[in-house]
Amino acid sequence: MVIKYVTNILILIVLLALSQTLSALENGQTSPSNSGQLTEMEKEAVVPIDPRAAPPLTFKITPKLFFGARLDLEALGDNNSDLNDSEEDSLVFLRSRLNLAGLYRPWDNIDFFGEVQFSYTQILEDPSDRRSSEFEFALSRAYMLWKEFLTPSLNLQVGRQRFNDDRQWLYDANLDAVRIFFNRDPFSLEMSVSANLVESEFSNNLIEPNDEEDVMINYILYNAYRYGRKDEVAFYGIVRQDPSEDRDLAFVGVYWKSRSIKDQKFWIHAASSLGFEESNSLMGSGVDLGWISRFDLWLEPSLTMGFALGSKNFRQTGLEDNNGRFNGVVKFRYYGEVLDPELSNIMIPTLGLGIIPFDETSLDIVYHYYAQVEKTDELRDADVDEDLTGEDRDLGHEVDLIFGTEIIKNLQIEFDTGVFIPGKAFPEDDPALLGKLRVLIIF
Image (cartoon, rainbow, N blue to C red; front, top):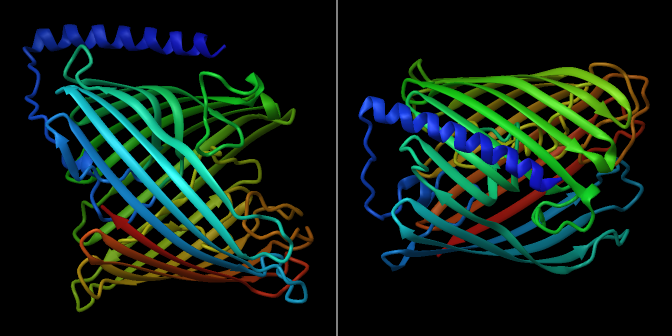
């Protein structure tokens, strides 16, 4: 089955590449020069802080071999996720992650990239014994990137690679994929077929899955038009086939972001999902929009207003992370650090205030209100364990504080804390708390 999908996408690659080769010849297009050095994109800028990005390749071992490493230390405390103070359910753990990455460039247009992660989680407090301390090893990424594949406008990437959109509203996942990028300014086009194990973040195996029904197949088409310096309109389509859960879903949508007005930034995500889930027909729509105003004053204050709405039968892709930033240096869960729900049958107005007291340092205070679109006893993919009564739409309020800084070069600190106050839709009304401290060391 997997071979059939890979064959189909390779046929598309060849056809597109041939057509672009002819077009390039007709236009007298020549290949841009390559110095063999890493580009700024490949080095992955320090800001914003993104712990899931590949380590910057800071060491040049030979003219063709580069290496990078990052140590991620995280302490997290999660208290009262069942919204009931009378039952002890605090979870406190320490997690250490060491990521090692290397890139080999035998020719200027061919890259071989690999990244592994060593992780150790130590549970300090868990009254219910839900989790235990554990050591893990994962192959995070391993791919071949063929730049200027038959034509200067086309790149081919094969292997385990990161899919990551601007606000991670669609996806932020490492997938085994065959992926092509076509780029001729101001237009770009991305097409891919990928696979991942249904219940796995890193241990995806397209070649030898444990069970064919454990594999989810993804088809992604993303077409963007860039205008101005950081303005973009994109149209996308995503199809996900999940035989293990009898689920086939398709997503179509548009994403528009702009900074055309001085000190202003806005975005609009609008999408529809349709298909089948556990033999039930689903069709829904979702929207996420926001506006950021920055002020040329002391501490560089900013004001963010956002609104997100997902209908009862709307589903996000299942690959999303809902992780981004406003005007600061830290990416955070912009639907709430504590509740962190999927945008399905929910309405989320958001208000944020931020300052930048020093270079590479930011502080954000973010408020969310939550309400169901239709009264039900289910809240999809949220980080609270308590069921709903189904008798009220009021889900509650949340306030988060997010701080990030780069103390010295290659040493970054992030601190997040939040409190969720449940509304009348929950049978319990005690607040849930979360605190997280993260230290990133880049070698």
